[in-house]
Each structure stands twice: as C-alpha cells, then as structure tokens.
Image 1 (tube, rainbow, N blue to C red):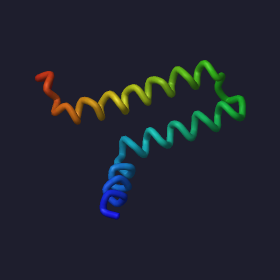
Image 2 (cartoon, rainbow, N blue to C red):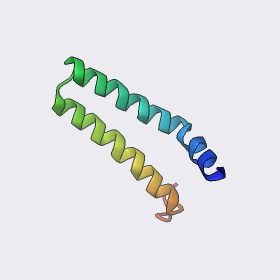
Image 3 (cartoon, rainbow, N blue to C red):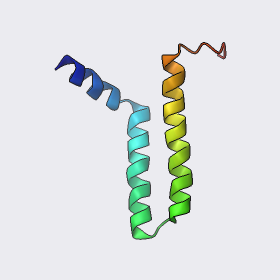
Image 4 (cartoon, rainbow, N blue to C red):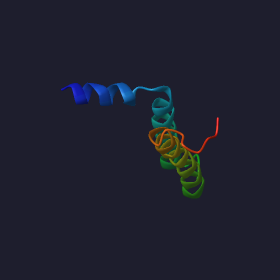
Length: 67
C-alpha cells in the first residue's frame, strides 16, 4: 500500500502532469484532425524523450558534472 501511495505522489508532480496533459491534448487533436499524425509523433517523441531523459539523469545522480 505504501508503494502505491509513493507512486501516486510521483505521478502528481508538475512534470508528470504536463506530460500527461500534453499527451491527452495531442491525442485529442490527432483524433479530431487538428494535427497530422506526423506532427503528433514529433511532439510526442520530444516530450517523452525529455521526460524519460530527465528521469534517467536524476536517477544517475547527475554524475555528468553539469550544474
């Protein structure tokens, strides 16, 4: 139960909420014809790559020495 609570807390971070919101908005726009599938794929790929890239960097302890 504690593990579920911790996961829910991580899910409700600003970065996670922005990622989920962008995913929902662009999915809706793609389904309604607001953006093309290529545009969706480009934006979604950038958002997801940034999200998971920052997660991996944080887990590694920012060992690259960048500030």
